[in-house]
Length: 115
Length: 115
Image 1 (spheres, chains in turn orange, cyan):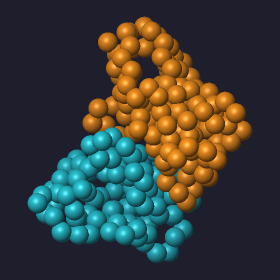
Image 2: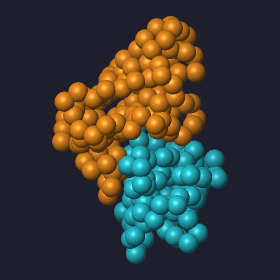
Image 3: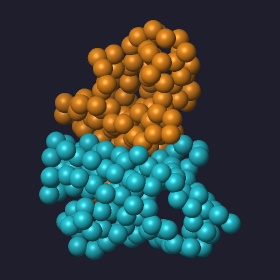
């Protein structure tokens, strides 16, 4: 597609429920990233996929968080047993080459609210 | 350890004047890239400019220039001829070669352009 697409744009869920956030990167972009942005804060790295390599999961805050990328394209970030501190905007980004000489292209984000 | 510091939580500038947003970084990796992103109130992240650690000249993109001082580990963003539409959050970011292409972000600087 023309840009990075994320869905849903907003999600309100009850504490303890599982949620799935979807990211559809720009066609042909081999690298895909998930970041989390809490209100008024900077971006917190979560996970990075590059081609067929094993993902860099070093930023996932707990084992309740997981992500997969199917067929080198669409990615799903899953949060199990959501907690109120999980409330944030989850941003997905993609790039051609890991961002070596290009910046990332970000999606519009999913605003997650855990009540 | 990798670290990005933006010490100005907020900045004001008069329309048509230039403004400098500060960014310092810390890394032991000789090969790294530095980025600036703009985040308007709409929430989207917009890539502005990139500087590689081995680049001899400061990067420029239209009204944006990056004042790269390698010995001081600073990568300040200069916006010339500020416009009202420049009002936004600005994030400095760094990617280092070692350990993959994970990019970390600073806490951001909110820029207010006054008419």
